[in-house]
Image (cartoon, rainbow over all chains, first blue to last red; front, side):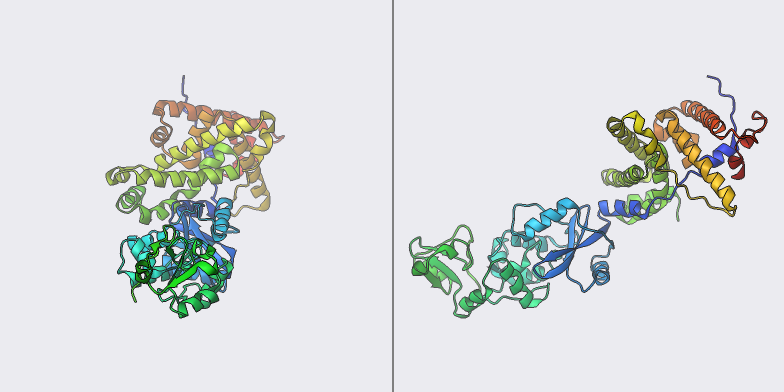
Length: 266
Length: 212
């Protein structure tokens, strides 16, 4: 074909003027999708309104704050990424979070736990295995992740859980049976969350105060953590209690395979 | 702001640290490319964002020396053109041709700057509407060449690289596209004041003259 030089400066200028400005959401959306920035939205929980932050890699942060601005500034200070409000969680994430908070442990929620140590992540992943309505002592987590002496470090890791409620650090209590600290508002908040999950914390703390650490059934000769669903099915007539796993063992009781009770440091 | 070559080297050193600058520097042009190829703002937003995300993921899989050598402008344009093409194919499956017009209408609200008066601004806006419409009536192949070469402003060599076509082909397609656009504008803008179109093609369209 013959290409006669075709100069049309006015047309070329007009074409250049077709350049448009992208809405801010385009650039920010790309940063969110790649995990370099986050969005957040409020959710309702048993502790009232909380905020959930997420990015393309998963849920990155859950927290309470008096208002959105406070949540944003805490997020930026702690995580170091930019964050912007969204109207709501993406539909799939919203239903996954709702199901998880409702006690469904099978629902998968992607979590963005970059920047945390493998030890912390292993503690949080273990906490995810504790069923709704049950609790385990810190020492149980330590033993289960193969670091039986790291009980204090487990407590610290749980205190630093960036996604409370989604990762149920509230289901981990002190080895002496006291309810223990909670990052989302102290022991009272922890009692409220556990109560909303169907656990009678007054009963639990009263048992602990009486020195009860484990309970068993004299028909099965199996010993459990007191809140294990198997233990709670035992009728009062057949229920036996132990101050230690050693006491249970010497009475001929074997540990439950569901709740896997472990010896607790004094 | 550093050059694209400098940015590519920084991305090679630390992808996550450099990526926000890539987004800032290229977001508008990728959106423009998608908008002028597709004619729909929502589609363009999605394509531009998706192009940025795909660029990031691609670079995650590249060795640093490969990232450092990327020519970001044509490379990002090429990702955007491919995503827009896939999007259009799907859109064509969805929409019967008779519904083309409302689709065409969506992306035309071009920001017109400058100190010209309201009348001239209205004229320019009208011209830009006509031009954007005429662009969407080009064949996709010619349209892509025109959008990269003259809307985005890539060189012929960069346009050839982005579209994976020889430079000679690009030149011919751009030439053809400009002629068709001019013809379409002249047809659309034929007004009583128009005179001697061969000597002063721009005068056919007062609005087009106004933007010079």
